[in-house]
Length: 255
Ligand SMILES: [Mg+2]
Picture 1: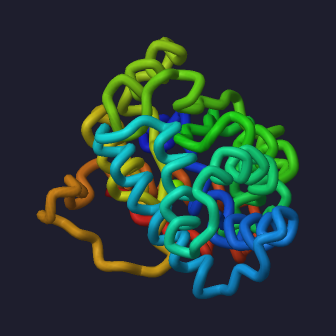
Picture 2: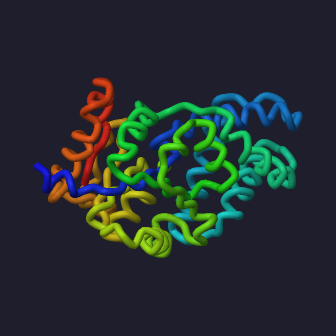
Picture 3: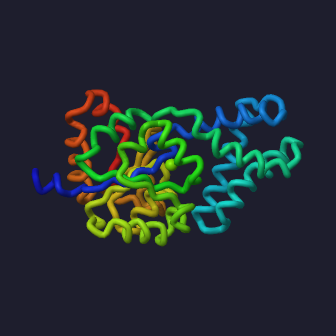
């Protein structure tokens, strides 16, 4: 048992869609900024359309096809063009949007309680492609930041998940940790899981929708090898916390 317990010494947390409900923050921010910019009502359908456009841009960033600035500005340019709004508003809108994203804090499951309960038991780090402005505000306002031992943001590292350069910089900053002692936890297969697997660290897919694991479909999620021990260790780490955490923990799949 003790041997298992030593397996995970550090958790690398994704933020958006994992610790925090990104969709809720996105919707609130966009709808409020439409009012602020005098653009009229942004309906739920319009937000959904924006969200789809946005996802496409982030996927292109993950594939290394475009740079971060093209994501941040390009998504709004495209969205505005579809709506007949001046695309040149995109830059100013995005600048405000980065701040507004941190105004709405909705936790995913019991993320705050989980992070708090693991504090001091394992090291915890944020690994995110989100902007410095948005993520700094979110971590502070959510209270999650106080339990973290460090924050790694792609904008500061100069490399995006899932690229190996991102993880190399994380590893370089944490020389006392072996790869097998880390666990990356995230909702994105194309960013967190793909990056973690390529970097050679254990991965934990946060899958609240209970989607089927895409084993053998190019994402590299493997049948659990050492994973049950890792998962058991995290469960043990949570065992002193609220019962609800155990229930919610069923959403976590280690692969
Ligand atoms: Mg995410």
